[in-house]
Image 1 (spheres, rainbow over the protein chains, first blue to last red):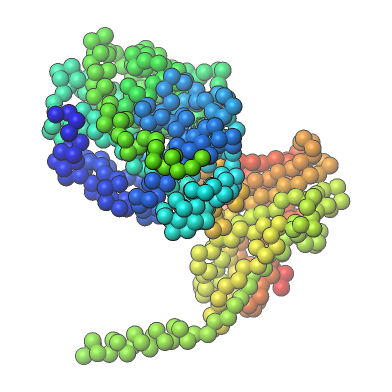
Image 2: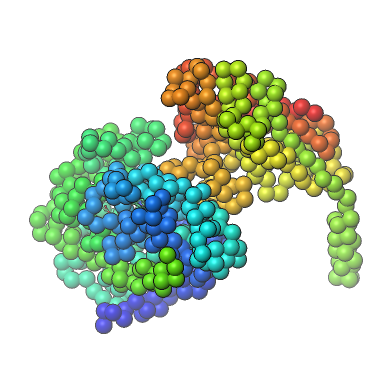
Amino acid sequence: MKKYTFLPILLSVGCLAFLGGEWGLFIYPSYFPEPAYNFENNPLKAEKVALGRVLFYDPILSRDHSTSCASCHSPYNAFAHTDHDLSHGIDDQIGTRNAPPLFNLAWQKSFMWDGAINHLDMQALAPISHPKEMGASIEEVVTKLQANTTYPNLFAKAFGDSIVTGQHLLQALSQFQLTLVSANAKYDEVKAGLAAFSAQEENGYALYQRNCSSCHTEPLFSSYEMANNGLPLDTTLNDFGRGAITKQARDSMEFKIPSLRNLSYTYPYMHDGRFRKLRHVVQHYTEGIQDSEFAATDLKKPIHLTSNEKADLIAFLLTLNDKAFVFDPKHQFPRESFSIEK
Amino acid sequence: MMKPTLLPLLLLMCTNATSQSKSVAQISFVPTYNNTPILLDESADEGLVFGDLTIETLKFYVSGIKLYQEEDLVFALANSFHLLDAAEPGSFDIKFECPDSIVFNYIQFNIGIDSLTNTSGALGGDLDPTKGMYWTWQSGYINFKLEGVADRSPARHHRFQFHIGGYQAPFESVQKVKLAVKNTREIEIQVAVDQWLATIDLSETYQIMSPNAAAIKMAQRLPTIYSIAK
């Protein structure tokens, strides 16, 4: 039964309000809001998505051909980096933040834990040029791709021009990432009337709605706004999040609210991966909130949960795991393309 | 009755539009240091020396070029985003087709890139992020870039680096410039870089690389160094 629910969900909820380009590349349920991504400037096309996928998995984007996007964003972890609290890049260097999962990016208005990036297209510039991530530059990457025997062809198929440009490279990476839509968890089946929550999940859902939904808003399970959720500062990192970007005291310790989808695949949690278990996260919200002048008002009033309620809340969170997404072969390493050359 | 008259009218309008005579006009920017043009082509591989100061990089965006007759907009360049790079002297001449009939007495343009363009994703041409004018770790174009060496700078190797940009309040750095100009088809605008550096003390201010209060101050002083040369 389970395995075949994907199509019925989409059909039953009258799927996609909006295509974003060619039919079938970008599908989402009707209870999702309108995407934030401006598809008019970069309409989806199968060849562009395919090129973006090859690029995403190709270490050619790093200085020494050691690190690809997928090195830190693995499909089996909903494109996060499981086990590493801080990300791990070129020359085995450790970054300062946890690699976030990548899904439902079309609905995000800003990117990175501190929202420093204003558009999905421009995001890839950061890892490509970060000395601790891929250690290259976009100029270098464009030159390497142009000199490669395969890529000019793939760019020609995708963009009608074999000249590799920064714009086309970035747009192709966006195209692949935009197709990473996660909307097939048990929660979605319940929404579509194809499944029902257990009593425990139902109770957890109510607790979530009461305590968490103002920030982790349905159906994406994030409003994708910035908030200070009361984490104490880790003084070994001194990461002030949004405050370091805007240089305004009120933004200090604000981070982008992450989605609660796929949590089983994306541990450890928070911008610095400080919590390994959901239990620890829930404990933070019930016992660990650090009050400060600028902490979110929603969290000023303590959250009290009994141990049964904590278990119920976690049971509900697990209904947001989207196995079909995590194991979708369309998103995985493009074996076909990598046998061509290299 | 209305319908039959519409077609000839349309045709008339079309032929009118195509027969409107146009010729090539040119706006040239001439960056100078103490009135000496700053050219950083192959002949100036190591930079250009002006006494105890060497200029190695000068790049800036000009966008949204418009011509006005007093307050009335009479002509706007289409898709007007121009990266001017002292290492590529050709980039300083902006050529465009200008209707012969228009008369103007002001030119207006932006130094830098507006916030809408800054948030529109990956763009091409002069706006391509491979041009070295886009920040990587935080979104946004660098509007004006000046780099070099000065004895006074206490930085490593006495370098100074100004990457002036930022599009988000309160650090919006794009600057509008409006200059009175003769109604000619060859406009030359001098950019007196020395005057800009004269507003700061390089022994104290020698590196600005992100949108912040210091960058905004520097950006606000840019319009005054642009003037009509002819």
